[in-house]
Image 1 (cartoon, rainbow, N blue to C red):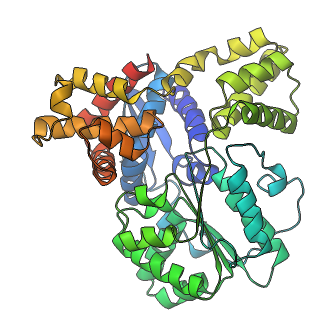
Image 2 (image 1 turned 30 degrees about the vertical axis):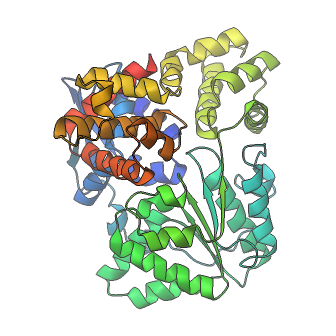
Length: 443
């Protein structure tokens, strides 16, 4: 039972997380016991346990709940016989930013040639191409923002590939903000900060994904700001990506936000109908699947909110066809995906008004109380949860969310998001409340 549940949960997590993120944090986890709706998972170190509890526990519990078909809890325990944690790995196994010698691979996965362009990502794509032609001169920094699975990492990899191939002597460092922080912590432990600084500041192009990871890490932000300044003053190209624009980054120093916003800001939006169709056709061709037009339309309409969701869907269809020996007609595709329909419906965006209404009902407060200026614990907690759910389940900007909840400004909403995210790491009751609310919003 435990293996079946954890295997299915892993499949869902693989679709929800970036490949590097999944392999780094989730892949080493081992499921060991399922009892009383609680799944016990072993992790390789105390550091890994603390990190996973803070950053991924809510996502893992949601995946386990879907895999088991019931509300589930996850318990993390340390087993040091498993693979060492990211900060404890030997020096030779750690990911280091170096001058990237990128070979020409026209069939490479993350290049400009393999990026599917549409109206919702064209500006970001053209800007990325432009800086390859004139690194450090045109848009510096280039800051790309948007939700997960919309192509930000693909664009960053394509930039690194193109600049690394065309300007070998300049050197390209392509890292995540998490890697930057881990590298800095490791350098501090080994008393090698000079080496760390020389390595990061001696390259020609710095490409950093997931800069929102720096939020709340004051020492890391300080070091990153120094690195940013040193490279920028020398005319070196800086490319950054985040799940939100600079002014919405929680727990980020204002000076760093202003640096991020000092160049060109471009967003990547969810794909429109035409781009969804193109994405399906591109991915289907890459997998060598033979799908009739009716199935392509079905996938584009129902299963292409982002690229990761689409890739997971196509993997399930491919496995279904090969294991069951069925031709992928529209009826067969619906059968193969029917167990996951609930997941898709849960992701549909609810309106701000509906989110607020569900929060009021759950916490038994009136709408007038929730949007009032009162800051009692009875109201401030539900108000912050409403902001958090509005951010997750609507496309409304922070200013609009704040306006709907009593005319509060965007900084108040940013603070609320950070508070709820911190509480989720240890507050079991809050996780249960959010699960119940999200289930209602999915209905």
